[in-house]
Every structure is written in C-alpha cells, then in structure tokens.
Amino acid sequence: MELTVNLGKNSYSIFIEPGILKNAETYISQVFQGKRIIIISDDNIYPLYGKTLINALPSYECHSLVLPHGETTKSFDTLPQIYAAMLEKKITRSDLVIALGGGVIGDLAGFAAASYLRGVKFVQIPTSLLAQVDSSVGGKVAVDLPQGKNLIGAFYHPKLVIIDPDMLNTLPPRYITDGMGEVIKYGCIKDASLFDVLSSHTSFEDLKDQLPSIIYRCIDIKRIIVEADQFDTGERMLLNFGHTLAHTIEHYCHYERESHGEAVAIGMYQITKISEKAGLTASGEAEKICRILKTYGLPCECGLPISDLTDAIEFDKKNLDGHLNVVLLRKIGDSYIYPTNLHFFKTAGGI
Ligand code: NAD
Ligand code: ZN
Image 1 (cartoon, helix red, strand yellow):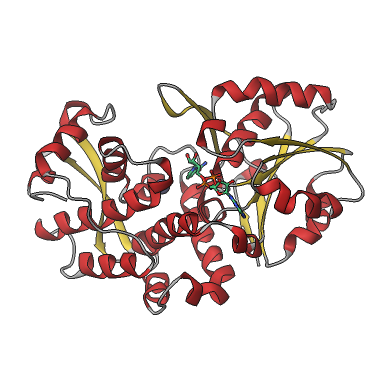
Image 2 (cartoon, rainbow, N blue to C red):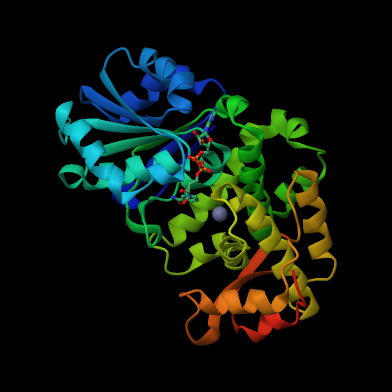
C-alpha cells in the first residue's frame, strides 16, 4: 500500500507492507542516488533488525550508530555524539540518514539530519506502533531539554517512510497498548468506520490480520491533516484530542512517559464525558469510547479530584489567562476545536 504526502517540493511517499524491510533498497534507490548511509537506531531495535536492513541495502556503504533506548536518549545532549559519528563516517550532504526505531529515534535522528550541514536527506523506518501510525509522518522532529519535551525542533520531512507491520511482532505489549490509544484517537476525530472496525474486535491479537489497513487509515488521516496545516497553526490541533487532559494527567500524576497512551485514553474519555454533559457531544459517545479503550487494555479514569485537575491545568504554561482550546467531538468521527476556559472542566467533578 502506498500513500503520498503532497507538500510541493517536500512531498514524499509512504509504503506499508508486511516484510517490506527486506526490500528496502527498491524504495530507497528511488529517492537516494548517493553512496553512503548512516543508520541511527537504539539498542533494542538494532539487534533485531539492523542486520536485515544492512543486508537489504547491498549497493550502499552502510554505517550504524546505536544509542541507548528510551526517552532520555532524545536529549539535546545526545546531538554532539550523533554529529561526531556522522563526521567520523564522512557523511556529506549527498549522503543519507535512516532512522530505524520508534518515535524517540525518529524525532532525534530527524533533528540531527535537519541540522547537520544544514540538512541531509533522511528516511524513516518506524518500528513502534506509535511511530508507524503517527510520529514518522508530519515532519515534526525534535529533542528534549531538561526544562521540557520537544523544546528544540524543526519541521523537516523525510524523503520516504517505509512501514513494515511485521516489526510490531517484537514490540513489547505495553507499547502496543500505548500506540492503540493513538489509533483509537484517529477513529474518534475523523473516521467513524475505523472506530467501528476497532469496536468489532476483541483485542489487539484479534485485530492483527487487519493491521496494515489500520495503519494505512491512521496515516491517511494524519496525511490529510498535515497537508492542510503543514506548520501546525490550525487543523493539526485536532490530533491533540484527549491531549490537554493527558498532559495534565502525565504531569500531575507523575506518570512514566511509557503511559502516554494511558493518559491520552483517560483524556479522550473524560473530555467527551464533560462535553456530553455540556450538550456539545451527542449522548452515549463517551460510553462507546470507554468501552473501546477497555477492549484494548486502556483506562478511562485515574481518580484525580477536579480541584487538583483544574489547578494543574491552570499551571500549564500553554493555558494563559485560563483560556484554552480543546478538541471535542460532535459525535465519533467528527471533531472540532472549541475555545473555552477552565470553568468548562469544573463541571466534571473528578476524572
Ligand atoms: P520509543 O521510540 O522509546 O519506543 C518504545 C520502546 O519500544 C523503546 O524501548 C524501543 O527500543 C522499543 N521498540 C520500538 N520498536 C520496537 C520493535 N519493533 N521491537 C522491539 N522493541 C521496539 O517510543 P515511541 O512510543 O515509539 O515514541 C515516543 C516518542 O515519540 C516521544 O518522544 C514523543 O515525543 C514522540 N512523538 C513524536 C511525534 C511527532 O509527530 N514527531 C508524535 C508523537 C510522538
Ligand atoms: Zn500522543
């Protein structure tokens, strides 16, 4: 399956196919005529797929940089090590960076590629569910500072995205659950029929044979939104459905980053419950969301009292003067941006 993200001279193709990793050269040779490649990956993923990828690129001189796994690697402080490796391997502007990994490696290697020598070509080979349905597409690349996540970044598009759903066979279950939070989000904001497909299955295992088409549908939604709002000034905000509360929950409950999907799940259900109460969402939708979240092992609530929640939202630097935009659903598959204030959340009585 193939998709094209149409962004003028920044356009690129996305190929989704089980086993496609073994044919990487067929696709890479269409966008890269140079000789040297540096593969950036982490110490979980590289031992599983590094050799397969290198064997699949016989016409190129391949080098690798393997970094420790985890969000702490996506740090500003990791960049000098990456630039040093690129210099040592004599990577020039006519060479290529391949990001082989989850969202951490995609964001980090993408930012390194964007900034090294004012930009070298890069290709995304996303390996986690979250990266395959979300972070590998859209051109946002970034690193974290001690003061906060994604504070240093750029819009820098890959030349190509290669998605091999078979790679998810080795992804630990907690990251599958995490990614399912974002998959359900796509159904909620734009695709009622995707929501129905997800609702008609009983678990991720049960869904597996449909995975390529589910990834395709998620990426297609992201493609449409990114094409409409390349630089994140409007429509892209719909992708933040559930995320206002999620960020607050993550911050306030000191959740591990690994629970981002759980925090998004709680955020999606709770915001829909609040907006249903306010008559802004068709009744019964919150319950449907809660049911589907539970099917895929995700929570709907976390026992946070409303006073703590509103305090935490108030503290969030994005919510100046108590004004904030939230993403709501008219009904499942139909989302919109709703400008509001903190009072909106006070009707909840706890989440
Ligand atoms: P991750 O990259 O840390 O991957 C999760 C874990 O799974 C890691 O331990 C990794 O080593 C392991 N892993 C990945 N693929 C595997 C595989 N196939 N087999 C075995 N193990 C595998 O985390 P993530 O959830 O993929 O991404 C989170 C990051 O993505 C965050 O930094 C977030 O900010 C970023 N993000 C970016 C965007 C964007 O638009 N750029 C969007 C959403 C999230
Ligand atoms: Zn998210």
